Length: 218
Length: 245
Ligand SMILES: Nc1ncnc2c1ncn2[C@@H]1O[C@H](COP(=O)(O)OP(=O)(O)O)[C@@H](O)[C@H]1O
Ligand SMILES: [Mg+2]
Image (cartoon, rainbow over all chains, first blue to last red; front, side, top):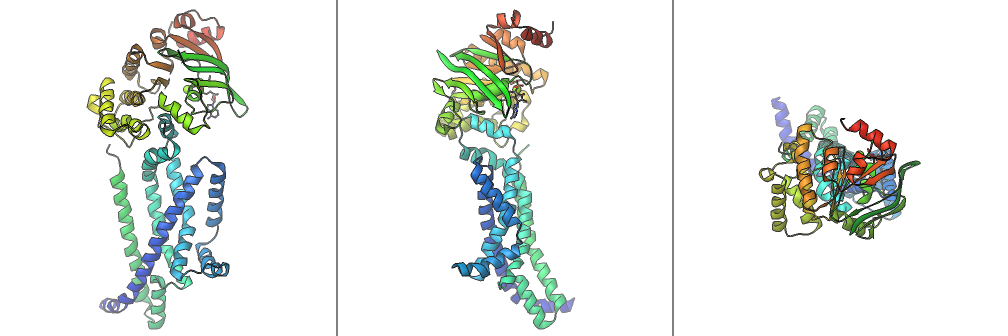
């Protein structure tokens, strides 16, 4: 145990460099997948048939492709099409796209969980579609969507390790490199696991706090 | 003066025709009660008037303007002038009673906030809920929620209010407080179209009663005629079943 702590002091600084990239890729992926997910969900519930169909097809296609393959595609194929991205940019774009269908489904199920009577009441006082969404549906839908949104965020954090396959030196890759040069597999991979866990806990706590603070006074 | 007119209105869901060639009208200040068996198309007809449903034939006019769901601005204008009260209240659960009433005036009509809140307070007092302005819907009884919903409808300063079975979701002991508010509105000259099974209310308050059966308008006349001396055997049958003899 003492040995583990001593070794940790040695390896942590290197691993923390990886943590920085993991956080960067994860945050970028959150923002992008959330924005894309919202757009897809709005298209789906817009009542405009063509938008709804585009959204549906996008969700089916992207969800049917492994995130890993999406990353490869963006990093290795896009340059041939004239779009060269750095590894970190490609990872953020890839994760953002790969996760957008899950985000879209989270938001859509939240929106569709709200009783039809709510939008009818809002329409009946003369609101347009956008205002119905903003003032009536979304404030209620967010409470429904938050728990699944939280678990999707944790999944995205863990899947950010896929960035290592396109040379992003994130936590998982730093761990692997360090382990293969020192042969201290147990110590290093235990540290890596603990660091991922340590990053997911604040996410979970943040979501729990949000859920509680959004709850109605009853 | 005619406020709402329906001529030869037809509506179907797929192959199923639920409103068949209905023509009638509502004058300013008139209270029209709409009665008929369950599934006869009462809600559908009411919802066509403010464009919550579309219709396939005939014409509905409000203030002479055609009700057309595809005319976005037109339909929103009509909805701000024809309010609706729903069977299941449909209050916004994330807002207080006061915010429910002030929502339309502030965000749809752009009324100054302070003025809208002041007016909303008065409206809640008028429906007997001065002490509940800061309550959320979940903290209110069904009767209180429906009175907030009526205040919300009034907040739009409407020319007419549509009621879709406003007391059907209430416990029997709470029906009276809602009907009482509706009676006082009628006394003040509010134009109302009321779908109801409350025959006492229809008899005492309505200027006219129409009876709908299978989407067809079978009776249209003053309550004494339609409720007391109905001509159509189907109306007689319906009333015999619904009225305690
Ligand atoms: N959204 C809908 N889709 C298909 N059929 C419907 C829909 N809404 C109502 N209907 C049908 O239309 C008829 C009239 O319904 P409704 O207007 O609700 O009757 P009422 O209010 O008189 O009970 C019924 O046969 C009902 O089944
Ligand atoms: Mg009905």
